[in-house]
Length: 419
Ligand code: NAD
Image (tube, rainbow, N blue to C red):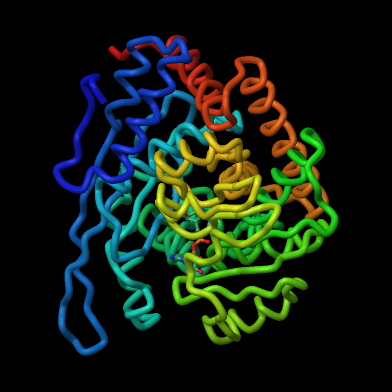
């Protein structure tokens, strides 16, 4: 990016990808220079060293991060990732993406992200608990329901969110459910949170199918990534009448032309952490003859080379930054409909918003009320992104970016620059 911008000390990774996409969008969006300055410089970057007593009595120090990118539209909100490849640059990019995603969905949040460079599968549950609690304790003066709200991401589960909530509450001296979303229901978690990220992807697909006359009943779908997002998406896709013909993990892909029994696969995966069988290499999933290809693994999963084999006319990017810029340019050039993460991946954030609102009020809604509100918000986001993209003859990602930047522009202008 030629504009002055923050540069992470190492591994610019996703931060650079964010800056690139921001710069490209400036060609079609009128963004005030002040807004741009804000967006190109994260508000706060924190690096913490986390000493943990391991089960063998030795102490190991892990590196943790929390980045607040922008708070023009509300308190910061973002996930916590536990993965060996977590870096400051990656965290800054994900935080910026949350700023944009919240603006696309018109939610009153700014953007944040955090994480620890660790492979949680290599820790015992007690070690993991000590790590998560220490991470929360190090951040305790910087987070809170009206400052920075944490949530789930890769490598976490409801229990991790419960430890964050408990550690924060014990430290400040009162029970504060709203500091974290994705909690168990017994601790103020919302109905419908478990599968919200996957449900969001399915609802976006259904809304787009309605608007653009795309097939639904019996249409074939391949899902890269069978984790929290990919697994729940596959189940909801099946409920919508789609035929899930392939799913994959980092170990391999399972393909069955007649369709897979998703509930059985999920039960097997939950019990063993594996799919029952693999008959393709992970990357072979991209080239399958399907109507929809869903990317629900990690960032950069589909690159320029991989994109050349894609046969699906529609690619849904459920994982943040799932497509590289080269892959996206190639697919758009071939006339593929690319549904961007800013729209497809909004379900988790939307559910977090509904949980946070309930926590602040200590008043909880029924599953039906949550579902109705959730579906309405997804439909509105799809309609607004499509209207913006169609009105300006843009692809859906650029349409979503323009919409987000307009909203951020207005909030930044109204707030002014303090002092
Ligand atoms: P997860 O760890 O539960 O699942 C990731 C899945 O991807 C695993 O099945 C893993 O085996 C698979 N995978 C990794 N590399 C692969 C490869 N090369 N080929 C095929 N599969 C591969 O993670 P998740 O929580 O489902 O998150 C997935 C994406 O969705 C991430 O980008 C995350 O940021 C985003 N996201 C998650 C949430 C949430 O609430 N969990 C919310 C919003 C966005």
